[in-house]
Image (cartoon, rainbow, N blue to C red; front, side, top):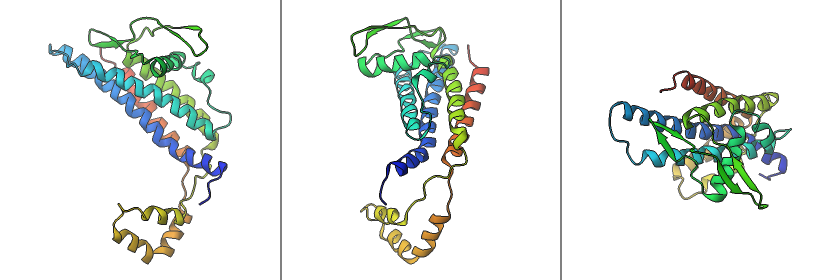
Length: 237
């Protein structure tokens, strides 16, 4: 299979649902850690030291996933996803600026715990790549809340971007690509034999299979939107 720029864009669209699910995984990680912290406090138990590491680590992964979705989406969407658009969402500008601080400076961002909640303690100051002083206001909300609010708005924004492409068919898997994969030493012999015996049927099935990447991605975004709404409505205190 010859890879062309157009085919590359189609394949990236096919990967998009998985990256949305990865973004949701990191969000759920944050929520779980924050909820466990509050419950531990309610039970009068000592906070495990690991909790104070997990939340900053989860937030770092969460913010990097935003960058991935922006870049991957811009590969196949027109108009592209921009930080200017993301900045209009709740906490969108903080997500952009905090990712730079975490990626380029190693800033952990989340370093205050109070009454079971995790916070960005205060305004963050850093220098950008041009030497200009940047000031990043800290969100007033706790980490759990502002991540859910951002994820909710980001999900709705991405759904609106994907909507016009909902009925665009995704890439078909070429049989030669399957055969190449079966050459791996990790693939058992019976799998190669199975392909050889059913080659024509498998080739026909591959040609008849239809996938709609944008539609599937929107489905994943709708699930995340429902999760955010439910969690925000039942936010522990």
